[in-house]
Length: 362
Ligand code: UD1
Ligand code: UDP
Image 1 (cartoon, helix red, strand yellow):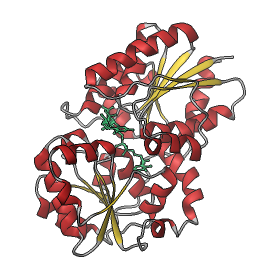
Image 2 (cartoon, rainbow, N blue to C red):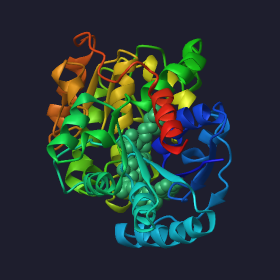
Image 3 (spheres, rainbow, N blue to C red):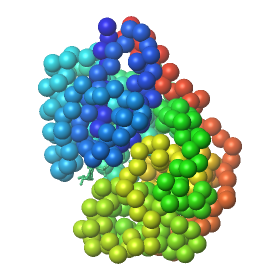
Image 4 (spheres, protein in one colour):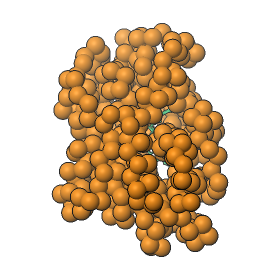
């Protein structure tokens, strides 16, 4: 039976793989082996997703986390190569743009094993982002480029990727939002579990390296969010990277006005997103989820890969270096709506992906 080997390691990849793995499991004649690199390892950054999204337990856990980008990616590359030589899969599947993505794609390409990249073609055109380097190189190594949007497809065509290698399948996170969102649908108690009233809070997430590793930006974001609390509670599920950088930059006092919680599972996160008055984030996934649940969003970055949402007015970019600009943008966004658009496919990206894999491997 054709063997798919899937490499995942970071929080958003568990959510994306949950949608596709479910579809593969329902397809006769395909076998999937999950490999967890270990990049995210806290229970609330990893195990919780396997449990609540019913993702099969990984066949291999490489236990590789931390260190610089080169050290982490290098250790993953060596360990994945060893595994690929043992397993000899027919295809390697990778998701998104993390160090785990690049290590999986590069290890496979060097062994002449075909690579399928889910979420191919996204570009921020900012090479200072580690994710941008990971995406470009992963796309270069890939044989099957599964794009979430028309913009992503156009980016690849412009870079000279042959059209025959590209499948515009839509966004697997939309599949996940539809499937698991139904589970969270009736959960009006979600915000109350965190001491919040539906519609009466802003939900914030911050973890991007360019925001957390620059103490000026980090302080501006925390001060901007703190100013919002004069009108609206702000809940911030704190990413471990951000917590570490806040401690290191001696900024813990800036958290006092905020409602800080530990990172939450996906179903709790969906409940928090659905009932938020406004979302402020630097996360790729959270930008889109705000749109799926029709909640206005402020993105705390210089640019975004998900340009459709900015163009349609669902999302507004705010360069996060000025607390008062952040404060004002969040309060102004409340109650706004964007244009009626559907840029992320039909909610069946996983079906299209699996269909293509079946044809390729059959
Ligand atoms: C990674 C991805 C980023 C993605 C994000 C999703 C890269 C280059 N970055 O960023 O694209 O958007 O995941 O959340 O791959 N840590 C813990 N516990 C954990 C995980 C991380 O304490 O379970 C801490 C460690 O101090 C670690 C730091 O967070 O060194 C950064 O983790 P890392 O995986 O390197 O990058 P992220 O910022 O999580
Ligand atoms: N998420 C979650 N719990 C949290 C914060 C985020 O389940 O405390 C989910 C969120 O709903 C989205 C995904 O994690 O599906 C986004 O991951 P993240 O922001 O870590 O990475 P990015 O999308 O920026 O790569």
